[in-house]
Length: 128
Image 1: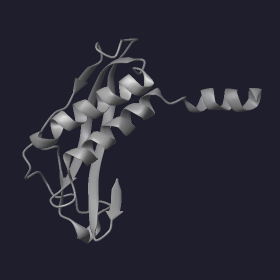
Image 2 (image 1 turned 135 degrees about the vertical axis):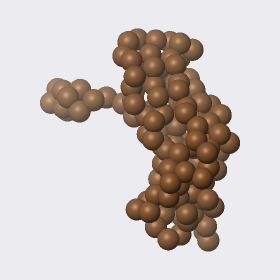
Image 3 (image 1 turned 45 degrees about the vertical axis):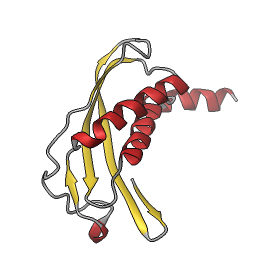
Image 4 (image 1 turned 180 degrees about the vertical axis):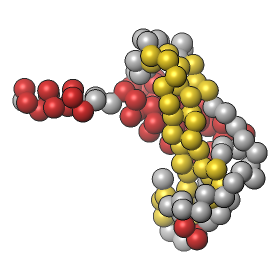
């Protein structure tokens, strides 16, 4: 996600993979948040382009924000029908990343996991 905020940009990339399906409560969902050293490989084709130096990986300084954002989303929207989620993909900007940005991205990822699937949406539309 790239967001222009006045004279600066905010950047973060976060993606997750469902490791294990199964119904779990908010407290029972396992959230894996692997961290890397901040000097990971450069992500040259990021949305930030030349506005920021973006590197692959999630530095430890953002890990707690990812867990908090994911938990906040589950409290607001309910747990996804999975028991284990691993945040496998991340990239951060040297200037434009922050804990706030990664918390928001984690909430968004979890909201996508509980969103109706395409087939469910088609059924709702056809029934409407």
